[in-house]
Image 1 (cartoon, rainbow, N blue to C red):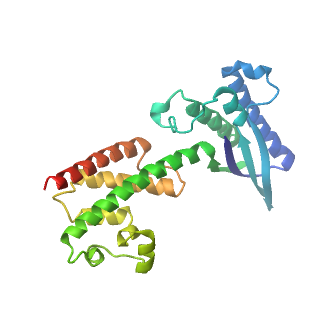
Image 2 (cartoon, rainbow, N blue to C red; image 1 turned 90 degrees about the horizontal axis):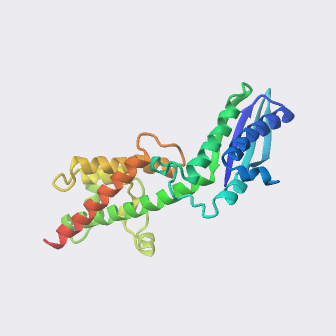
Image 3 (tube, rainbow, N blue to C red; image 1 turned 180 degrees about the vertical axis):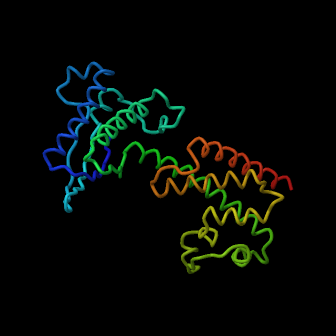
Length: 260
């Protein structure tokens, strides 16, 4: 379980290392209080290494890597980063405990007046979470694309979906049809969630305002996940609930089509 940080600070190398090791000591004490067996182990539950250091005037930028693998190996042999994903219903799980220790490290570092900024660039737990969410978003998006293709085919002339699509939205990119053929795709694959909403808005008899709102929640959350940044206006709980409603809607849509 690795976590990578960049830290901007005003400390020389020796002083900086002292700050890092003090923060790790505080985290280690917390872990050993909650997991007494660590008192008998020679290896500490948290290790670190400095990856690089860059000086500019009186400031330094240092990259460090925290390694929690001894902690997870000792107490969570079946450690699975997808159990709770740090969401609110995962309270008390291995992941939430890990996040608590990580937060303690960060808070301790930030309490030093010589630390200008600490930035997290990689968190093995969050990475696994985002991989799972990417899979969920991918599967939902492909179902929406299939649905759009069906709707446009019904209203198209001679199956010319692209011409009808261009009347509804502006396609920003141009791809040769040979590439579409090779990948078994069409122009629908050039669209994103904003386009999906624009198309669905032209079918008010099918897509209610509630459905459009759920699609927008997926869009906002998808942007956070795909760009590896913190959640903005849509949170995991909102995402899962919106996804569940949309999957039910899609299933009912295809059922109604079969009955036509």
